Length: 256
Image 1 (tube, helix red, strand yellow):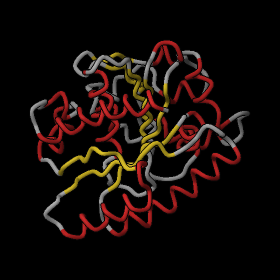
Image 2 (cartoon, helix red, strand yellow):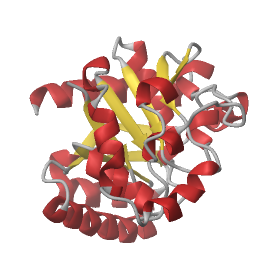
Image 3 (cartoon, helix red, strand yellow):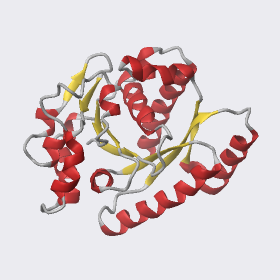
């Protein structure tokens, strides 16, 4: 049975896509079968996984509108070692088209149920806004991985996200919970970041992952080559951190 996780944060620019593609690549490197679902119309996770969003015959848009299955629309990325259910600009139109259809917030969940036995992990890259697309992701997932920078405004955004998750849990998906908070773009030399990190651990306890992702130039460069950092430069500090995070994720899921 596949474990399905959303990578979500309502604040933009916190490294959701970087986290999704590098965790997917890290899990694939340690022998897990991974499906990466891109729910952001910008398609950055798709391009960052070595798949050209402009030439995809089918995408997550077709899956949400039930004109294709996950098996038909998924593309295996040889370079990265995982399957990509990609997104492109068509997905922006799905917001409007889903408004009047039945089971609109459960479309992705039903589609993923058909491939439940084919994967160990499904990672969903959500857009930064709380939209019908994000709602589809949250309704499908067993849990949420929250990447966040250790800055004051990130704490503000986290409060909003926790409230959203509580609402979805109460009304649409009883399985949904926060799996953990991942500290990203972390620089231990900055006192404020250390203070926010300590606050997170004090408030959320073991919900904060042990692994910390450092601020790393090679991780930032990797998307321009259409690859996750873990594949682009496996020896980089950031890539090594994501490999450690993948191992920690597998261990945490075994204990759940």
